Amino acid sequence: MELSNIEPQIIWKNFSKLNAVPRPSKKEERVIAFIKGFGEDLGLETTVDEVGNVIIRKPATAGMENRKSIVLQSHLDMVCQKNSDTNFDFDTEGIKMEVDGDWVKAKGTTLGADNGLGVATIMSILESSDIPHPALEALFTIDEETGMTGALGLKPGQLTGEILLNLDTEEDDEIDIGCAGGVDVTITQNYGTEAAKGQIVRLEVKGLQGGHSGMDIHKGFGNSNIILGRLLYTGLANQNIQLISVDGGGLRNAIPREGAALISVRNAHEFIEAATALKKDILEEFATVEPGLHINIENSTTSDLAVSEEDSKKIILTLKSLHNGVYRMSPDVKDLVEASNNVARVELKGGELKILNLTRSSVDSSKYSVAEQLKSVAELAVMNVEFSGSYPGWKPKPGSEIVQLMEKIYTEKFGEKPHVVACHAGLECGIIGANYPEMEMVSFGPTIRGAHSPDEKANIPSAQKFWSFTKDILANIPLK
Image 1 (cartoon, helix red, strand yellow):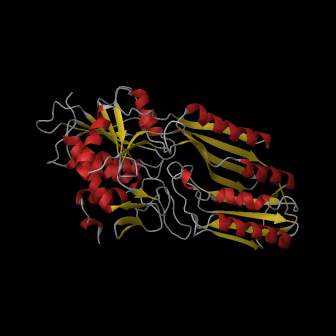
Image 2 (cartoon, rainbow, N blue to C red):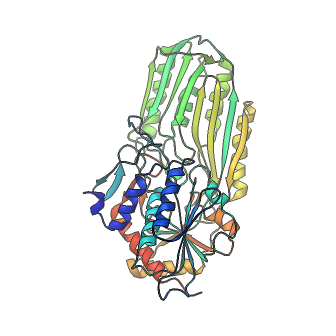
Image 3 (tube, rainbow, N blue to C red):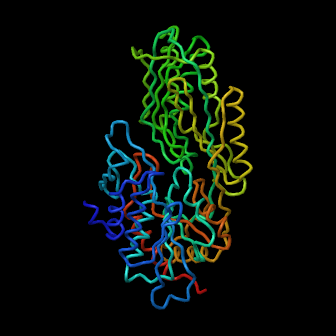
């Protein structure tokens, strides 16, 4: 089936147009121009603020002028992840999509449904002539995935809407009313290098599911960096290990799927034997949740300058000690992860070490408690630590008028109550709310699986459900 034949055709048409435009985080120039041109071609008031957010205003349809005004909000950028065997350039190519039963997927890359389906939905409402709605402000933010700099740069007074509908969640039976904040924790150090003294061994971890480091952090998925750290640690007792290189993971907000390390050891046979025994245990541990996990441990002839044994030990012990995964469950909201950390990227090349973490929490004090624990571990190993990109969480207001309205519409429309939840992802609502404290906010969206990984897919029946629900919400917005 072609995407053009899927209902609602208007959504998939606009999603296809959007996905033809390269839109990596921090490289949104082309998609900003695309959305700006889209608004101008419709004859609507269109502005681009100083950081690159696009705002398009559309007047209320006839009879809806006295309803509360609405901000429809989604982000333009996407997470760019691909399988190691996929030849694709996110900077120059549009996403290649295919239909697989009830799902739309990409060919070996992330799909961009996060948050492209939200963007396409807003585009569809802006160009419609038969959908009743109050006065609208469509807010398309930039750089949500790697810093939320679009939301952070949105100034007070740019918006006049009274209710914000954020279209950026991934379960169609959920209404989100709160989210986690986050902070980037970056660990670095430069080491001297020397000739490798021993035999060369290569370790590789691949085939993990990956996923969203907020929404999927509680699912027990494997982290390639942590698994590499375990394999390296097992050799410390009996080996003089020199690290030559480590290359694991990628973006902070994606659970690492792949990683490799090149090391020098005194006795390769002995190390491979011990690491292979641990490999068997790890495969058994993850057999249920990570059936595609592969671990390769083998002799190698490739070599380069290595970090000293002493410094290598510090790096390995640090990798083994950094907290990864759920740190604390919320005592107040059932089944909500309060705080977590993702050891997202480990890179050692030419003696230069960089470890990227994303620490999240719905409680600011526990966010910094986790970050400070990471800092303490790294500083014990005489490494440098920097906190950056901190953004606030979004405090739930379950009794707000828009939440009650959406619960009522959902229940009447679908015959069951929605789940009103807070999530562990970092939504932009908390940041925007800091400058617009009187604005009511809610987040919802169609069902998406595997966001932030090449397994990302969007559910077609769910998109139909989401589109119908969105139109009914707009038609029933309360009076001013």
